[in-house]
Amino acid sequence: MRGLLRCGLATVVSAMALVAGVAVASRPVAYCEALPVVNVPRQGWGFHGGQPITGAAGSYTRGHGTINLVARTTTGIICQVDRVGNAPDRQIILSVGHHLVYASHHAVMFNVPGNIMTIDVRVMSTTDPMCPLGTRGRATIFASYNNVHQDSVQVSFPAACKDHRHRYTGPAVVTNVPPN
Image 1 (cartoon, rainbow, N blue to C red):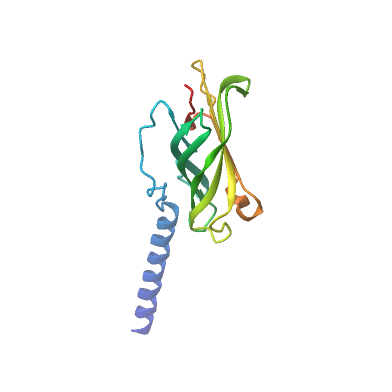
Image 2: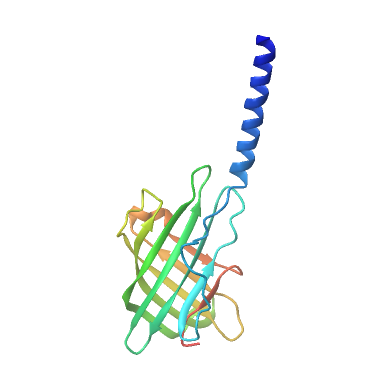
C-alpha cells in the first residue's frame, strides 16, 4: 500500500509540476488594463509600442494625452509592462507633467522627418519594488510623416528605475504627435 501511495503521490507531484510549467510559460500579461484604450484626437498625442509579450521576456508600452503647443502644456498617462525571466511582470503607470519640455514639427530621426515631443513623467503606480512611487523621468515621442513609418518612443529614468529605460522602434510602434 505504501509503495502504491508513493507512486500515486509522485504522479500527482509530477502532474502538478507539469501544469505549473505550462502556467508559467503561458501566463497572462497585464497590458496596462488600468489605462483605457482611446481614439487619439488629431490634436492629441498617443502611442503604443513593443511586440505582444508571448515568451519569458519582453516589454510593452502605451499612453495618450492632450497637448497645447501654444501654451506649451500637456496632460496624459503612460503605462509600461516589463517581463523578465521567471519573475512577476513589472508594471509602472506614469503621470505626465503639465509643462511641455520640447516639441518640434521639424525633427529628423532615422533620417526621416517628423514631429517630436518630450514630456516629464512621474511614477504614480508601480508593481516593481526597485522603481518607487514619485520617481521622475522623461518620455520622447517621435512620429514620422510623409507616409514613412519610422516612429519611436523613448522612456528615460534615473538609476532607481533603470530597468524601465526603453526605446521602442520598428513596425510595432505607432505614434501620434501634433501638429499632424
